[in-house]
Image 1 (cartoon, one colour):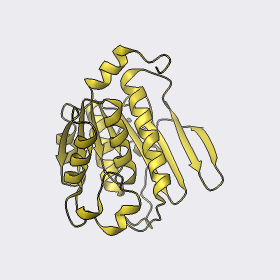
Image 2: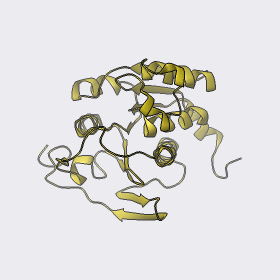
Image 3: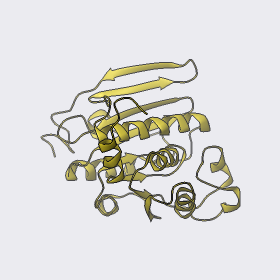
Image 4: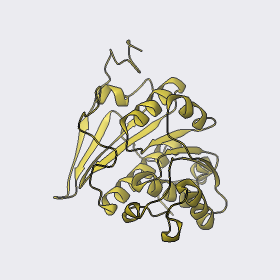
Length: 233
């Protein structure tokens, strides 16, 4: 019933595989909406156990699962909602070595980890393999989103060549609804890139602040000397 969305495009979703690196507020929401959209295969990568402080944004989690593996509960929830989705899980952090394994047979990756080194590892692995990646992050009431199409658009290292020295993995505020909204946008971009439906963000970054409901699109450019995707690689 979605105008312009064909049966062939739905079948493309069914035959597609998506890596979700991080199943917190962003990745967990994105994974859920990809599952109900009819994605064929989800690869979920996330290390660690569920804590009470996670519960303001973890829509795949359950209170009685606190203290247990997050990826196990994520797989259970997705299978309960759509048992036709194939789910593969990795309870480990994203490194350049592990990212190469996570990406086997994957058509697109979602970058949703709260650490710089994990995001950079996934970005490098995606560029090396030519796998599209959706990069998104939030902090408090703000967030950003852009797509990395290797060889065509800027990669993460082009836009953010250096880490924020003051960033702490668990040191930023999260309103669950903001991370959930951004996770939904990630799933929408993934569906567009996988099916050719609509117009995904290409060489553009979406920036928003929900405090005043302000949204902007900025043009972004590749860095010819980028050590990951440019002449410096």
